Image (cartoon, rainbow, N blue to C red; front, side, top):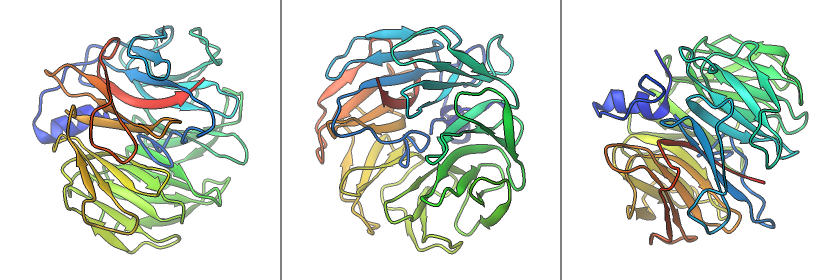
Length: 348
């Protein structure tokens, strides 16, 4: 099965999405989400927006407030599934296609560069998501294609740790403040948790989980799981496996999660063509963003507090749309260079 958050969800929902790299082609912020695999941007420094485009095998970069590419990265990019930056500002791109020459690896780019700095291929198979362990700078890669999570020391390409116990088509990763690794397993409908700096399985969460698509941790350490199969988000207190609460109002095909600076939860609803917002600890919709939204697959907040949404469904033109803090009005729409935006990140 070829991995793609967008492709997988579209297949499940019976949608027809444009093929990528010769085949049907998910996404992953951050401790939030649009990324879980992507850390939030620093509020002190304006950063460029990076967009992975699965349809045309590129990563396009946009300066703050602009709608035309500042630069385009194509060298080494094949069916890009995930983006993340390390502490030094190096960009990591997960190239997912195992059938196309140049794919099935992670390519790394120095800040501001469009040339490959190094390539990680040892143990990599359809890399669906990233996470970086804050204390060590180690890169963790969720390999949807071989049911593993592989780890690499900062600046290295050699595999030094593999997580396999309980891993089954992993599609999202996150670390808590203790350094424990959380893995979302799509096919087994579980989230598995691993001891910090180890491959030892600590616990398995299955209650309330069905076809989990992404993960997020709030500032209190509560775990949020987007369950595509159940059209809900389940929440778990730190260290527990029982559902604390379930959010279902307004949710339809949840594909990405993130939090704003006030702790509000944002959910991208691929099938509902909306982004719904929930106040901390609440299960009722605080507000709904729909203007410009179609097939939302990725979420990320810029340093200015604006929400960016990757709209990946076709035949409508794919785009990235931007919204002011705590507002639903459309502030900016980017279409130039955008072609199946599956992951968003902010960096140098």
